Image (cartoon, rainbow, N blue to C red; front, top):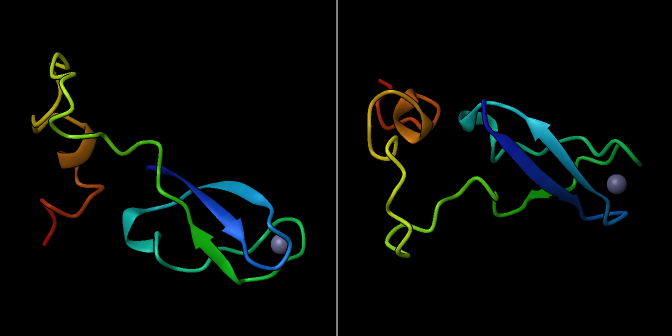
Amino acid sequence: MPLYEYRCNDCSAVFELLRPMADREVAAVCPSCESRASMPLISRVAVHAGSGSDDSPSMGGGGGGCCGGSCGCGAN
Ligand SMILES: [Zn+2]
């Protein structure tokens, strides 16, 4: 399950949350003020495709990472 970062719009707290890809856009409850007005930040998990670092053997494979089912590209 990917780890996402969110920022609370009310108190500006940044917090992390492990949740399914499908729930990424769902507002997360801020642990500081319990507001639901949070926005997902750009995940640091995201890979800059084509940036030159192409030496990862697991990239693009079906074993894990993006195509392991968490991104929805293999889900139905
Ligand atoms: Zn908050």
